[in-house]
Image (tube, rainbow, N blue to C red):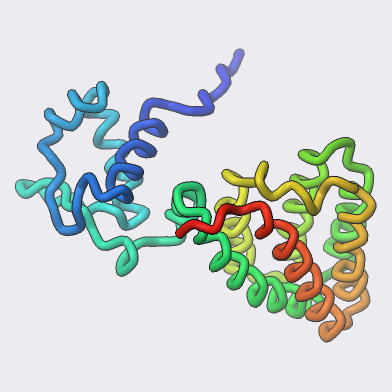
Length: 233
């Protein structure tokens, strides 16, 4: 039986994005009730089912709360929001990327140290193979995505599932603006050269070297990437 491809951007996706941006822009103030569903559906040109699905996502990210008989209220996302908001915040306010990098630096070092202590033979093969895939990248896009996959593999090698999910969060916040952050990946061999010390330190079980290699990688790529990001909050 033929399977139809899933649309890349559904009506729910588009509506979630519009509502989220309007909330972050202050069109709907913190603590205020959103207009009634019928009015909102008409305003955005969607049906109420689509609206309800978008609300579920916004509730999950901490932007709104819905109560039967009362309506949907805008929440203070800095108090109750989740990391699911990071990709949207980075796109809308590039200044957030500096704070993402700060956390990335410290968490990346912890992941590398734990991976050095806990990785197995399969992890070692995967890390070394991924470095070579970065070196063999055919263009900037390929190298950049292969580099991201290296960090996913490294997190898996730590054998801590929370680190894996945190890595996914950082990468998800980075992907929407990755075209701005392509400079470290223009030379495949140079990009792979930044990863090799991490991979080898982890594979040989040298936790101190793994930490230092991770910190060096993070600092160097941050410096290159941040030069391309507008300095806006």
